[in-house]
Image (cartoon, rainbow, N blue to C red; front, top):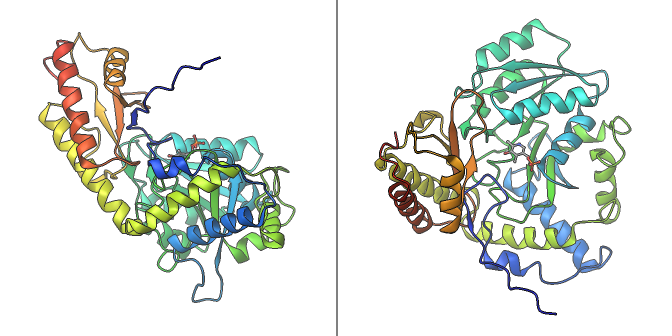
Length: 379
Ligand SMILES: *Cc1c(COP(=O)(O)O)cnc(C)c1O
C-alpha cells in the first residue's frame, strides 16, 4: 500500500499551533522511554530552561520558582493552576477583557471556586485603578488572575501595573502569559507573582501537547491536597518531578523532545529579547503592508502586542471571510477568524518560525486575493 505524500506545511499566521522550524520537527523523529535517563534529563533541562526565562532560579528572598509541566493544551495548565493554587475557601478576581479572561472565570466556576470578574471593553487594557478599588472593597479576594496578551484581540495588558497593585493589596497574582511567554519580558526579579502559565506551542515555537506553570515554590508547597482534580493537581505533579525527575502519568515524550530543541533555538536567537525583536519586526511588516492595502486594525498601536493583529473586515458586499481564507490557504497561508461578537474582524498572527520575508509574501498574497475577488475597498 502506498500512502499519498503529505502536503507541504502552510505558514500558520495564527495564535497557535504555530509554524515550527525543521530542526524542531526533526526532534520528533525518535521514540523515548519515559523512564529512560536520557528522557529524564531532557525533562530536567526543559524545566530549568523555562525557570531561567523568568529569572526565577533563586530570588533575593530565598524563594525560587519551579516549573511544573502538564500534559495537554494551555487550558489544562490554567485549570491545574487555578484548581491547585486557589484554595477551596479562597476567592479569585479575574481581569477580563477577552475570551481568555472569560475562560478563567468559567474554569473557577466549573470547579466551584468563588470568583468575581472585572470586565473591561475588549479593545481596552485592564483598568488598574478599578482593580485596586475592587481589591480594597472586597477583603475576601485572595487571588487575582490576569492575561498578559489577550489573544482575542492581540491587546497587551499592563501586567507590571497589575502586579504592583496586587502586591500592594497583599493578594496573590496568577498570570496567563500563554501567548506572550518567551517573546515579551516577564521577570520574577522585578514583578511579584505566584504563578505564570504558558504552553509549548506559542512564542516558544514547540509543537502542541503540553502546558507548564512556573510557580513560586513556597506557594505551591502550601497547596498539598487542595486541588479539585486528580490529574490536574499541580502540587502532586510537582512532587513527582522532585522525587525522581519523571512525569506522574504518561509524558508527551515527542513533544518534550521537540520543545527542548525549540528552547535551545530560542536561546541561540537571543532569548526573550531576540525573539521579541523578530516578532516586532514581523508585526510591523504585517501591519504596514495591510494598512497600505487599506485595512484598519482594531487596536491603536499603543496597546497592540507584537503577537496577533485584529483587522476589520472590508465593508464591501463582495467580502466573504471563507472565500478570503480559502484563497489564502491555497497560497500557503493560514489565518484566523475574529473572536469578537460586536465587530466583524479577522486575525493574523506574526509569531512562530516566520521571518520578515514571510510576512511580505503574505501581504502580496492578500493583495492578489483582493484583486481576484474584486474587493476594491479594504477599509
Ligand atoms: C492559547 C491561549 C490559551 C490556551 O489555549 P489552548 O487552546 O488550551 O492551548 C490560554 N490563554 C491565552 C491567552 C492563550 O492565547
